Image (cartoon, rainbow, N blue to C red; front, side, top):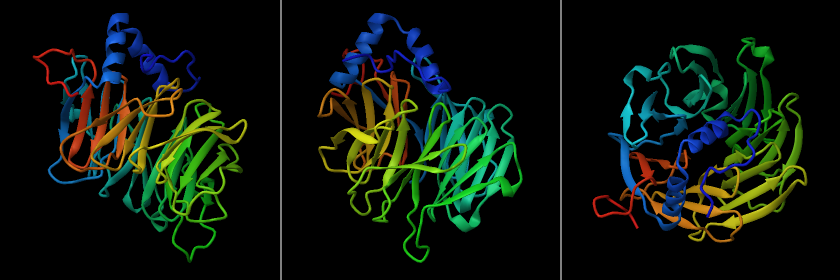
Length: 361
């Protein structure tokens, strides 16, 4: 199996992949081979690096060597060191809203966060100050956010999507897209949004409650015009919970129908589909942009490692000892961070297979 993170071509405008490649080059070849084998054979150390006092629905994002974790109304920052120790950086704690954080993204020196009651706030990660704030109370909770340069895309509980520019504070510049054709029915809420690495398109994943609409819709980012409805014959309620662009044309989706799909926007078709063997919903995706994929599930804190060239998963990993969904996951391909209801677990694949290490097999 190739070392996760070995990407031959990095998309222009994709800072996360560029950062991952820089970290990869610092790893010796023999260590890269050992870590790849650890992923495949499940030699890994499970550590709870963030503990919550009560059950939450946390969100976490790894940006360089900083791990950002939502904790109710705050977003806490943790330093991730090369020896796999994790320490909270209290000086970088971000707060500025009385509502709970739902989801956020980190892009360069800005953090864009969605909150309950329709709030969106853009923070400067250096000064921790608010750069931009909008409120869409009538839309319900902010369910998903994505960002490309100064453009923010947000999905809402009522099925609407807002596209706004952080350099323009006039509400007339906000573009609204309503995905619910019948407001009197159950809202076809938006579960996920993602922007293409080159900023050409953005994709919306909805709850799949409308039979005349597909759960995956692709829009032009500049004009906000609907370009494509992907797939056909979907089951009612087969909502899409996560979307991952690998390139401007290749995209991964997963959700309630227990399937992981790879889409090609040039052919507008699903090129390959993988089904979760335990028939449980898939909540989140990560990918190295090459052959390695990771999925989080809704049961027992379980994540899976996939190879695009194979039909079956390569390996599965369990975090903690409790029955918690995986709310999200992120990785630098040396360590996997998994968000569970009682906190954040780190699966460390840099460990050695020796008796003085706590190794999970």
